[in-house]
Length: 116
Length: 114
Image (tube, rainbow over all chains, first blue to last red):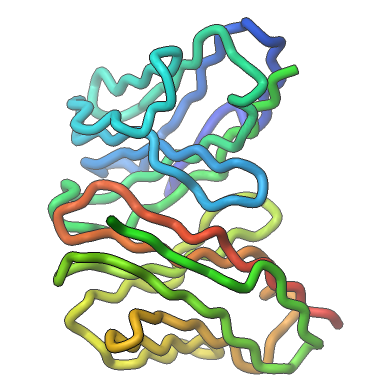
């Protein structure tokens, strides 16, 4: 497709369950970003990949959060033992070049995670 | 530290009115980029504009215009003759030239009343 896609669009999990959120970036884009957006707030940075390398994971809120991009294309954000405070929209974005270029980031529609 | 402030939480205007959304930023970097994104109810952030810190020329794109004032660290966004389809949450964001993450404001929710 032409844009960034994410799946699932909605996910309901019981507290303690593990979840996996998928992101398909724009084809050929080097950089991939994950953001967390709480209700009524702006997106907050979680982690950044340049190709398959995770160069920055400073925004991941705990060691329950894990992200990967093994082949430098599709990425998965995994949350283990979900907690209610993990409820948010998780946004994925991609940009053409490396972070040093400060390129425009193109966002997907997000995955809305609700933890009961 | 980087910070973006959007003091207007919610704005309502009647269709065809002009509306300005404010954005004030803080950064110690001399080279940085400012962005505006639109987030309609569908949730996807739609890119509107990218501006680097060395280019203070105002920009107009159709009904949209942006006023970048480095002296006041502001990057305001004006919609002229607003339409119902402009209803959305608008985010201002900053990234420094060697950075890998956006710093977003908290957004301004715009409602255009027909």
